[in-house]
Length: 401
Ligand SMILES: Cc1ncc(COP(=O)(O)O)c(C=O)c1O
Image (cartoon, rainbow, N blue to C red; front, side):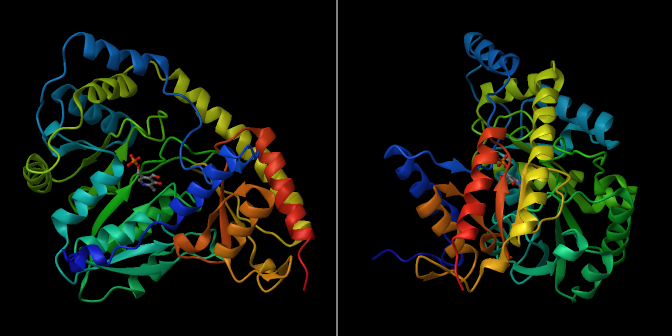
């Protein structure tokens, strides 16, 4: 029998896949499932971006291009980073990959050695620890609590540092919490990273999805020294409703970009060429559709926040999310109670029961490292948000001691 390598054996299977498979089964059976589990915009890719890909195909741009990315796209990314993030990168410092997930994998793979410790604020995007483990690193969690708006502080980070700590994976706006760090908070965190010479992977994929007056600030923009220690991750998936196209990118110090470029040329090579032309249009063309999408998310967020306020009467709680399109619904008040004779032991049970009995799909907090909540997305219509939250209230009311 073929043996699986130790590294791959260490990787956990995705619990969310089983849940979405069950939601799809119920839908196929004719049930009206409200899907709060969604991790992508429910908008189509804007027409001007789709057209750019079609034009590329018509022009015969279907051949290999440079493994690290189309020069025109790298130029557009460098311009974006300069104008929007105040970061000066030469196109040679930018690597285009198959989604931000792939960019993060490349960044960790290029910089982490066996046994290196990687700090990850928790709740975390579930892929971070698995990538770290796949690359031989050891994930070490820093707890971002509900009481502190799901943000970690500089001193919490400093307290977790050991001689083996090499990296911090920082994500603002954050999936799953929606937390957006302020520039002042980021500067304090950067100060610790500078003092301990930590590499920072700054995942800025939700950069455009910020509401309520907050603004995005890249940790790489803190100082020239910080920029030399940071690998900035971004992409077009969430901001331009392009999740299926698979295009992300990173910007890094020259020697890091060069190393990543080398091994990408021996693994995936270039991202499909037409998608790269589409991304040039996303970054440089008309961005009105993107702004309208963000505006719609902003309205839904307000709508959801109002409903969640009402839900406090039933023992739920939440922290106002400032970014991305997720909210965390604290529901530990239901744990230990019974629904139709079955004990709710944690977020996995709760999510499963909500799906089975109320046809509401959610993501259990346990997959993000915090069992006290379920994650609900607002990448769905106000009508569905309202109906789905009503069903959750109904479920709560039907539970028993
Ligand atoms: C925090 C975070 N980073 C990165 C990604 C991956 O993005 P992409 O689809 O570009 O690989 C996601 C997708 O869910 C995410 O939530």
